[in-house]
Length: 440
Image 1 (cartoon, one colour):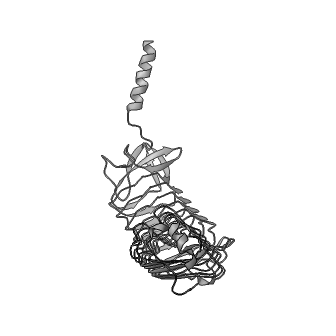
Image 2: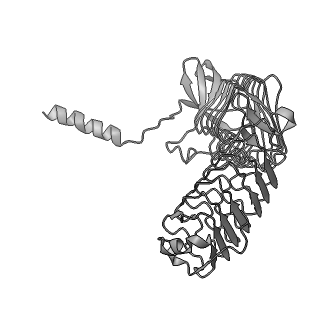
């Protein structure tokens, strides 16, 4: 019994001790003077970090600084090992690093390997690297130049996210996949060329790249194209525009604007959505703060949730006559919008669709609208008149017109005034009038 208790106590003591998932086997000084830490795996090694806390990997150790050349091999106790990978968080938060050269021996760069190296300005990735891991260079905000080796096949999710200083980028023909938000908020990037080898591009891969003026897909790509020099990435088989920039001209052959296609594109000033387009995806133009006018073609049937959310500069929107639904928060926060006419084709207006459109002075609601979502026009504090053409009062959800002066004129068909006055929600308005002119 005592023996069992002793074993149990020893186990508890072992579990209580700090455990290192990324324990290093040895360290060595490289040719550029920094001490690097290695983990042995057979005949090769992975560059790792020394500490126990992955969120503070160099606590108690000296961080590498300056220009770093990672060696292609390292000798330990008489054995020479090939350096084949840069481990997870190996140099994370090493803010004193200014440049890094990764040798041709390295084949993989793992997750967060150089994340938040805010002083890093230039990077050369060797020709043997095949994969750049998730968030490998996330928030390297001073990085201006990247040379990606010709063997890289995949660029991971968020690999270069927040590299706001990056001005130029060459994606080699070896790359087949670009992950979600791979270059998100690389705001100084001015041009992108997608090689014909790329067959997969993730969500919002280039969103928030406010400086982008040119997007080109090389001819011969079987999955994507930038037809007619449109400055956009189009998924060929579905005719869906998945990524655009400030100079995008949407071709007449495009049938849908993909989710988040222009999200955060602050340089975009006007958009004409052609008649070929039938749907506008979720978050498609969210936070395009310089967008002043939008014309939505006559074939669009749905405007997705958050489609124009926080387009604060938007002053004019023309909604085509085939739109049947306006999604949640579709135009919320469009504080510059002064008037909106919802056509007769629309049957439903989603939750908070025009919430906090503080500059909105007049709203015209088409005769087919049967329901208006919760808080749809809430906090549209400048509204001076509402016109509704439906003879049957649309169903109003909770707080639909919250924060609006209930004494403003509400124009409805003359024969429907009593119905509006009796309907829940509409009964809060006090100034019903017949329309001075039927402008339908």
